[in-house]
Amino acid sequence: MRDVNIFPSIRVRKTPFWDRVVEAGVKSCSVYNRMLLPVRFETAEIDYFHLKEHVQLWDVACERQIEVVGPDATRLIELLSPRPIDNLKVGKCLYFPVVDQYGGMLNDPVLLKLSDTRYWISIADSDYLLWVLALVAALKINVRVFEPDVSPLGVQGPKSDELMARVFGKEITELKFFDFTILEFQGKEHYVSRSGYSKRGGFEIYVEGTKNGIPMWDALMEAGEDLSVRAGGPNYPERVEGGLLSYGTDMTMKHTPYESGLGKYCDVHSTPNCIGYNALKRVVEEGWDREIRSLDIEGGKVPLCHVPWKVTVDGEFAGHVTSVTWSPGYKTNVAIGMIEKDFWGPDTEVLVHAPDYPRKGKVRQSFYT
Ligand code: THG
Figure (tube, helix red, strand yellow):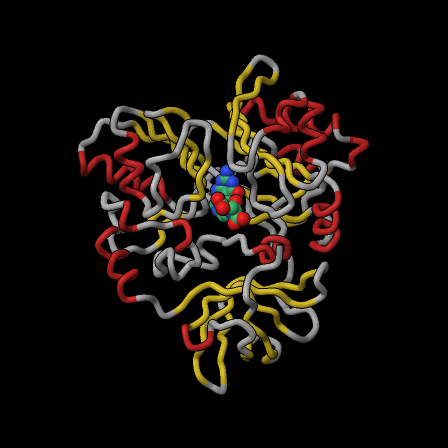
């Protein structure tokens, strides 16, 4: 696709790190939660191998937080998802598929339990704040819901522990996957979790206050000079190989968590307060007819995937692939697709109708690790 600029506008929000992202030579941005999301700095391949070897700072301010605070906070959170939170402790993150009354996915956020009466919902790209506000208004419950001035900064890659230790002290490296803690930086406290939208490991610093973005960025860049730290962003081939889903791309409100491959996180029977309880109970009883799968696709590098590509088997409809790209590491095209039940078994050979020419593909047993 020919390069096209994004027209600057107040409506498409800048991030607290934006000036540094521009200085770092950002080449491509996406728009996510009405905010710019830098995704490419060199080529996708150079960014990919750098992420797998070194450490990158990611401006993921677009992972906006929805703060839920008040006596009815837990009651509200229980309404949102078929994932149980009974045993969730303060200091824990949880990948948290949220649904509507029909069981359709509205978002796939990370939930942070900040206290017994305070949560952050770290959202993917949909207007989820509106849904939560509407529930509060309709239920007349005692809770406040708003978007705080908090902007996540990702520290991703195998050298992220070393970099974080240099800036915040060695203790931070003891943090477990999907736990969070509070760190002080220049007299201000920030939540920090071991999480992130890559399979390479790392942290996310929830930078409090727009004005603290640049000082945080600069401190990490300076401390990591000899670690080859540089700006990066969610890397398309890395996330497709690893099966990190993109809401709005790989699943939408037309899909249940089960179709979205997130059934392993759900337990309808122990979440009767979930707004999708009746719908999802039926899904579990009756089963479902399509599900997310990892696929390999033959031939040279595929073109960009901007609309779902149809998948067939002997001329019969077998689903769509929704994320598809060349993997520089595995030297094949990799994809995420929503595949019909008759064809979702491992090693099923399919035909993927790419815009250039139809290519042979194969359903995989699981994603790459
Ligand atoms: N971090 C934070 N907020 C986010 C994202 C993030 N909000 C938007 C978006 N990403 C939400 N989507 C995802 C998708 C996958 C994961 C996290 C958020 C993820 N999944 C792990 C996996 O699939 O390996 C593990 C989940 C688990 O097993 O608990 O991390 O990245 N703050």
